[in-house]
Image 1 (cartoon, rainbow, N blue to C red):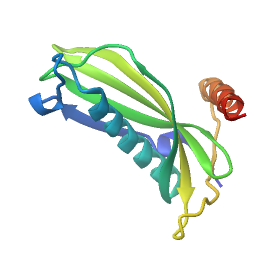
Image 2 (image 1 turned 180 degrees about the horizontal axis):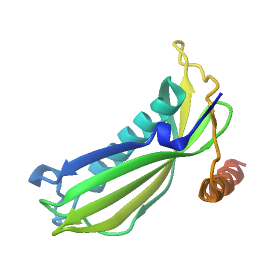
Image 3 (image 1 turned 90 degrees about the horizontal axis):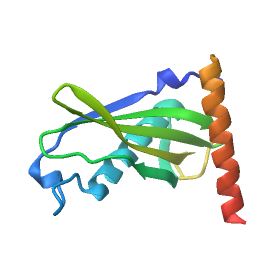
Image 4 (image 1 turned 120 degrees about the horizontal axis):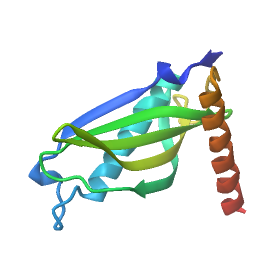
Length: 151
């Protein structure tokens, strides 16, 4: 069975409050990482129809700050599927004064689990466009790099 990335696309929205801010007046990175993990988990669960676990957080890149009262939009999409694992790209944007800025990108590898917490197969990702193929190929490069780091 194949599924399109659009079938599991996920969005999460927050308004930044003082409890989300660190001592430098910016969004606390740990809070954002937690939100990213939730979005990746929901995206992977939607794709696989199973419970999932985070196997790897990769290429977590902070591109800009977020401040109190900013709207934060976090999006997740499947970029690659293996036998039991999926790569999820999570992008974070801020919105302030009608302007949207891309402030973070992360790639997470999620593994689908059965009721005994053993890995189980996931649906293949359907590649429909040239853009889908480009994203898939980039994901394959990251997969190969992760494999090299484990050696």
